Amino acid sequence: MNRWLTGAAVVFVALYVLMHMSFFVVNQTDMVLITDLGDPQRVITDPGLHAKLPLVQNAIVFDRRLLDFESPPEEVILGDQRRLIVDSFARYRITNPLEYYQSVGPSEDAIQARLDSVVTSSLRRVLGSETLLDVLSAQRTRIMSSIQKQVNDEMKGFGVDVIDVRLRRADLPAENTQAILQRMQSERDRVARQARAEGAEAAARIKADADRQRTVILADAGATANTRRGEGEAQAIAIYANAFSRDPGFFATWRTLQAYREAFAGGHSHLILSPDNDFLRLLQGAQK
Image (cartoon, rainbow, N blue to C red; front, side, top):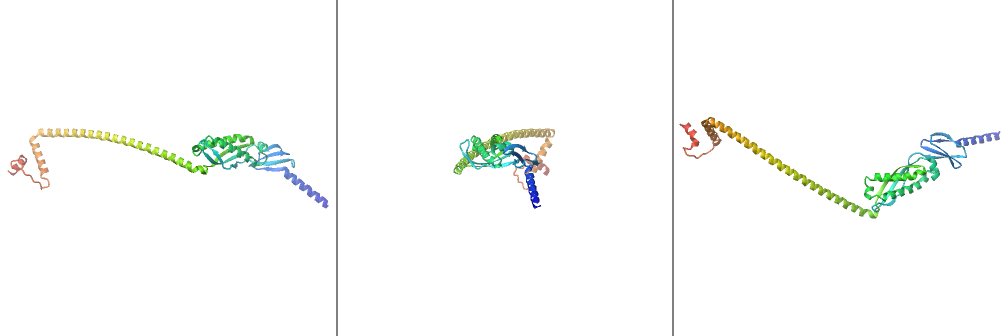
């Protein structure tokens, strides 16, 4: 009886182990390569429960998500012969598990050594034809796109698609930093002086043009004012002449009364005249 129970337990355990080794689950974030004694057989990308031959076939899991790779700092020589310490990183995805397995083996970390070599070579090749100002300016997007394309083209044979390559840090070597910063400051000062000189020249030109326009406007206004004043005076003279011609006596009397009002306004005026002065003729007549 004990032998029967022992045998049944052994059979049950064996069946459990065989079933456990025969079935496996593929997650949505994974891909599985089935190998038969090390020989690749098929790639499974559909998530769910799948089966394989126990003890003979092996399921190698690969992550289908974006993976990060950080490259150690490298010193490169730019196109203008300046040295630069660059720290880069790449993002890649395993797209063909069979090619990946045949190229570097089953480990996901095995590709990083090859990726490091390719990224470093591409950085040196592309940055070797660029200047420091280009690397530190908006041209960096174009430079990194060129590096990413070269790296992706070289890594396609490994079953890997390189999505992006970026520079995290780009620093000058410590021994060159101060000299280059001083040179850059001198260049910025020169550009600033030139900009200020051009601004002063433009300001002087605008001011001169404004002064010229002001002079022309004032001259035109003065000429117009003189013309209108002359026309008004002519009209006034004509009106006075017309009025005087109609009744010279009344006009003479009215002008004399106007002169009295202006001369004796305020009651404190003093006039020294001879009694027979024509200015007093109306007063003399009033006294009589």
